[in-house]
Structure formats: C-alpha cells, structure tokens
Image (cartoon, rainbow, N blue to C red):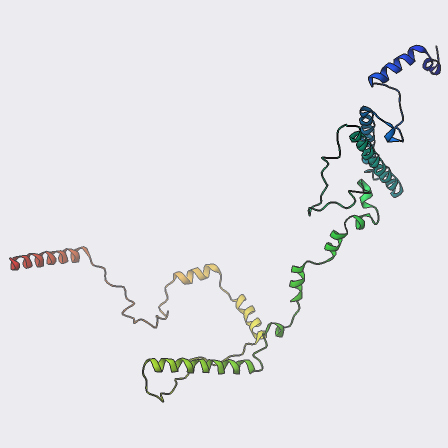
Length: 294
C-alpha cells in the first residue's frame, strides 16, 4: 500500500486538491497569512476572520479556568488581545476589498453609569485577567474612589453626631440672658398692643397698662427630664386601658370655660303628642285669623 507522501504526489490527488481549492472546500490545512493585505479575495478574508473568531472564543473560554496560574492568565490575555487586533485588520481588509463593513454597527460597551468601559478601545482584560493584582485599580479607578469616599449625605449626618447639648442650643437659657431679652421684647410688644387698643377704644390718657398674663419662666433640666420620661414610659397605660378610660364617662371632667353648665345641657326632644298639639294650635290660629279677616 502506498505511503501518504506517495499519495500526495499522485496525479489524481493533485487534481482533486486543485478542484477543491477552486470550489473553496479544500480540506488541506493552511496557515493564516501573516501579511493580511496580500489576500485579495473577500471570501478568503471572511474565512480567515471566522477562524480568528473561533480561536478567540476558545481562548476566552479557557481563560475562565481557575486552575491557571497568574502567568498563564496574562499570556492568554495577551494572545486574545493580539487575535482581536488581527480580527480588526481582517475586517478592514474586507471593507477595502468592497465586502461587508463589520466595524460600522459595533456598539460601545457601557458600564452602569453610562460611561464607556476603560480599555475597550485598546488593551482589554477578559475572564480571570480582571482579577489580577493591579488590574481592578486600573480598570475602575473612579468606582474605587467612590467606595472609599463617603457620600455627602452620610458625611452631613455624621457631622452632627456626638455633639454636646450646647451645640443644639439646649443650654442657652441657663445663664438667664436669653430669658431677660425675651421678657423685655414681650413687655415692649404688650405695651405697643395696649396703646393701639386704648386709642381705638378712646380710653383716657394715663390708663395703666395691665400686666402681661403669663406664667413664670421655668428652666428645663434635661437630665431630670430624661429620668421623668423614662419613668413615664414605664407607667404609661396600654392602648386597651386608654380606650376604656375614653369610653367610661367621667363626672369630674372640667367644663368649657366659655359656656355655662345650663348651655351645655342637651335641649329636650319633643314627643309625638307635643308635635300634634303644636299642629292643632297652629291650625286654630290660621282659622281664627282667616275668620277675623273676612
């Protein structure tokens, strides 16, 4: 039986091989041309471009393997970037020969903020290459700065934490200066108001100004208030007890100061007999007025 070299030299084999090359279905393994501009057939350019894309797909799948070392991941990433550059050169050659323009409808890859991902126009990182030391800081410097930097709202909230009570003005009344100023302002406003009312009522001059009806000022002690609130919370009745207290009428409830006790009594409701008697008296009055008028 003839060896493979003898088969390759036979006339029938060479004829079949030439015929397959003319039809574009050659089974012989050919190496991709190094000089892409030397290929002048759009069909050949499409064929080599497809082969490059298949090789890219295989390498991108392989770079996801967690068993690879960092050195192997870097080498694979370099090979993928080199294949992408070769694919772009094949696409430019196809467009120059009058074929399809594969680069016209390629959308830009954007991140969550609507900005283009760094490195998409140059060197790119795929798979595990994105987790290599120093790569994350190179790809997403802005996001890392935002993670480290606190938001303005958080800073504004923390700015008022751990502040003493004097910061919020709770100790302004302890020295008495603010209370004195407020008392003087209230007395002046009360005097001016009384002057306007006296002139409107035509009161004689020299009428003394009545005293300002108010209670004496009381300085609040926050420490005592906190203890009082805590004790009131402990002795606070439940919702059920509150409802029972509201439903139960209380005889000791104070009346409104603007009304008398008699005015608060419900008026009597007329009965049916009272209404019939009233209607009878009204009819008699109407007949009497009609008879006297005639």
